[in-house]
Image (cartoon, rainbow over all chains, first blue to last red; front, side, top):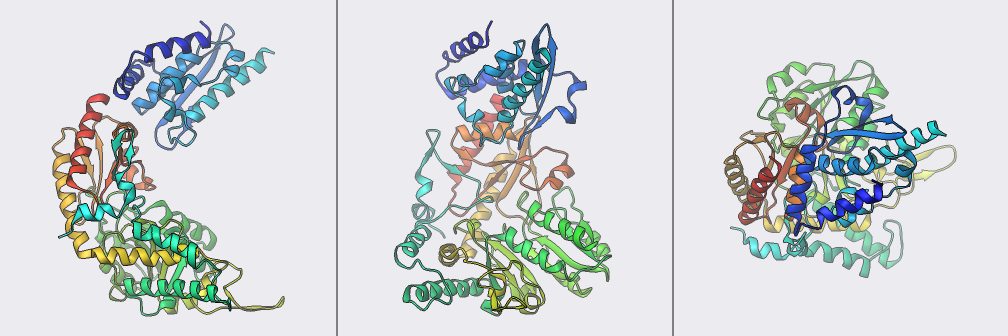
Length: 140
Length: 404
């Protein structure tokens, strides 16, 4: 599936919910289901420092695709990470570089990716793209 | 008895909605809300008096100068300073602390000791660390206990003839603990050390008397006491302020300038370089008038009632732990739910229109002490109600349900 296909799928899933509570409950559940990053990668080096919740990201190349794993100590942050990982992981670096995150707005979670939000997610998206750029350079 | 419903009418922001719910504002320890009287005073200044102050011969400048200096006198009276020139208007408590820390650079030497407390805000730690780096003096820390109180026996042990300065907050911003500053001041003076009290968190709740306290320096921010942001004050005893060198160079702070030598202006202007926050300085006085009209005794009684009510209701929630359980505390409740990150709780509460603060509250050493990433902090002001606390309690229950 392309990144766009996955984003459309997520938009579709969220369209079933009527209010914020249902959306958040779903996101929290996604966070609980997030495959955890391996302990060895939860290092200081892999931390993306947001103001309040900690976020760890690890990336590696598999068959010319970037595979991301991540974790956070806050569950709502983890939910958003789960959504971002589902979108970006196992994709070609070039596609990750070109992708946008506008779909977050469409699923009613815009506030979490606002640059003023103190949760480190904006830095996380940047970091995912940085990994993609680095791997793309290796492929060239 | 305060008529809270009438008081709430003074604060236009309290009638707005957030996320479709009536705003419940419990982030008062970060900044207080602004009454119409203060908002009107800002408008009135810019509509009728806006001019640069001091030295202008034209009428507007003189009127603005009068308003500014009258405000300084109000602040002097409020804190019971001996002279109005002992009140330095700054951009806020942080600026005031930096002014003093900077001034002491030239007075301290290697081996001198500075004592701070484990309950400090970063703004009352970092400037002193920087001062220690500049002067080779040593920073010592009064430890805290599990209730969030300073351990006074340890303080006694830290004091010596090398102690030159002691810096403690009057009330902890993260936990609400009221520190025994009278004792600290007396003991510090006994070894010849100067004392600075950070009153940023105290001034919304109490009316400090700097002469009765015999404190050397006391700092406050207007925006925590119903005033505007970007203005605050430093009280310093005249003798100390004369001893400290100027903080910043510029206009206003000079007596005479030649390229060979500049002589500095007298207090308070020596420390007020450049055009100050004139509107802010004037309106700081309006905010003080407003709070005195409500009355600090009334505020104390009512806020204590809110604190007791909220403590009882929140404690009843299973798995909720309150940090900072001193008998001497103001209307601040810092708490966590078992196994739930404060950020998550704050996010759910925000969806319900409830504004609390989450995180380390710029007091990481306290969080390290409790081994937690942060807390949820609800801080109450005299315009809050028990109904709003009920909304908080319901919100916390909902957050617990959703996040567990």
